[in-house]
Image 1 (cartoon, rainbow, N blue to C red):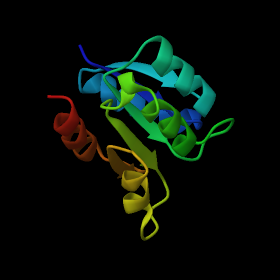
Image 2 (cartoon, rainbow, N blue to C red):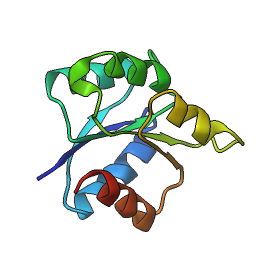
Image 3 (tube, one colour):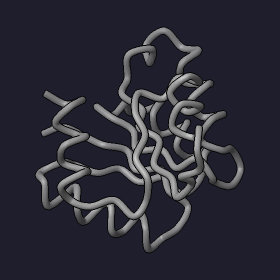
Image 4 (cartoon, helix red, strand yellow):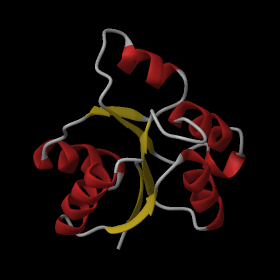
Length: 120
């Protein structure tokens, strides 16, 4: 079973994403802030990370930059999951190292398609 880390500071959003992922057959690990996400990935690397950009203690860009600086995480799929959908946000996230970019609210079909893309 593939494991996905959901790094999201909002309890309701994290719970909804966890429910969707478990329904799709994934094991889920949760982080409530950027520092918790970074520690979780380093101590028990998941198969994919869904990383909110706006989080306390350390934002998603900083978490992703830290992870990408470590050779063992260069190819880890890290998907930005954000409510920010302004022009250029997707391109900025990809150019800074995110594997992909999803905007909230995310549908089950969109989530499943994205996961199928990165977790064969």
